[in-house]
Image (tube, rainbow, N blue to C red; front, side, top):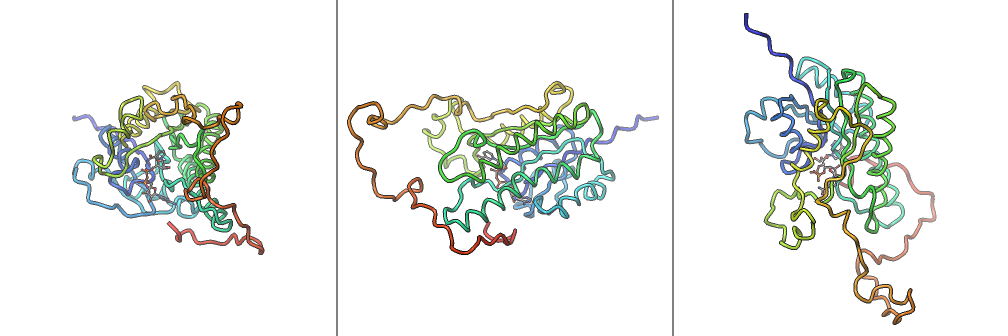
Length: 299
Ligand SMILES: NC(=O)c1ccc[n+]([C@@H]2O[C@H](COP(=O)([O-])OP(=O)(O)OC[C@H]3O[C@@H](n4cnc5c(N)ncnc54)[C@H](O)[C@@H]3O)[C@@H](O)[C@H]2O)c1
């Protein structure tokens, strides 16, 4: 009698709608590695995936991870598509990827809440709903954070806070779920998700010690490794930067910058506020900030 093939392992990957995004690269990597993949996104697939072998083991579910009642649908979606609610791997990748926030106060508060709800609470909700269906000792969660969890440019507070929050979520979960589920975080740097690598310049690539801008597959391969209990079974609660070495570069001031601070020539007067980095001060509204907003508006 022919041996019965063991059931495929299931990976749930969030944020898979864009064909050139990190989530889609993760979905492809996990399918190629032998998993069946449930993709979760608030958008429908934005293309028709050309690889039929991948399509056969990929199912797409549209839901908003920031809404508890929608995130709670994931186990049922696994059962419907794969005949079982068991989930071996959760890749929490979905998020609002633009880090910049508005400076007008009311809009900033609204932005803060939507970004925290999506980029941080969404990962927590997905974890809560999937955990009861993860086989103890054989399961893994990977949160997709960002190097912006550790370093910033101006006016990115909500995104940075959410991505830093994922680091805390991961080490807390790793301890709470000890011996049951390994939980790690990946921190991508600049990953080209434009779908058009020719839009990158030689200088863009050369800025990276690795010699090139990152690709979605760079993040996907790290997620695949961390999910694999055979290869990464001794790794939990950790952070992994995948940024081509950029965050290890020493940063010096531009020529003339900061001379006054050490008794040198006085700096030139600042230019008028024209760039994003020199916006006028935040103006708070007289009335209390309205905390009601629509999840579907504004992005
Ligand atoms: N591209 C980069 O340079 C980079 C760098 C660091 C971190 N990241 C992180 O990687 C992840 C993927 O980014 P990407 O560049 O592939 O962007 P992307 O916009 O292609 O992917 C994000 C996906 O998340 C989905 N999404 C957003 N909110 C959602 C919600 N509430 N419910 C369900 N789905 C939702 C979007 O529809 C989208 O398909 C993000 O978390 C981003 O912050 C990206």
